[in-house]
Length: 210
Image (cartoon, rainbow, N blue to C red):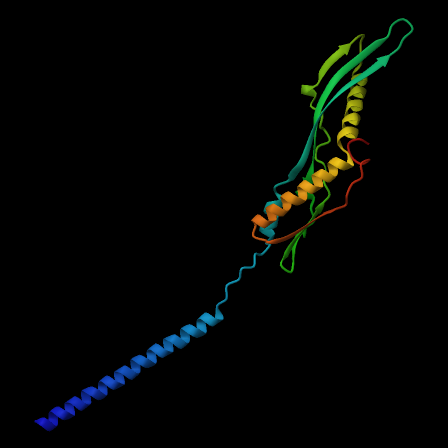
């Protein structure tokens, strides 16, 4: 009976050793497999500029970077040998300078290394109809005036506003505002390095005043 017990004990010990070896092998396999898998997985922090993202920004449309309110007292005088007549009006308006994003090139924003490069048209007058006729008042009027006379006075006021407000100094202020705001906007998308370029600068003589 003692020999049988010894054999049984030996068999149980051998079975335990084999089971332990199997378990150790499984654990090692899992560790090795897990290590290999983790080495193959890499996390990318790169932010892609997808066509959908670019189109969403283009859909913003006009982006105003500077507005200048102006008021002009404009008059016209017709002299006749029997009587003179005079028309004076006060015109008010606001010139808005900015960029129309819908007119940007398809690749207006692209990556150069780790820098997001933004290339857009130069700032310009967003709306040629900047006089608010509803807020313009008659100041003095004598005699009768035709619609053509009033239209000529309107064009004169428009030209004066344009010459006073659409200056190189104001254009440069709008450009500086555009670069600052666009840089902040693109950085908010996740890009640390941003370069903004405004292409095709207009001269003072172009636009509504022509």
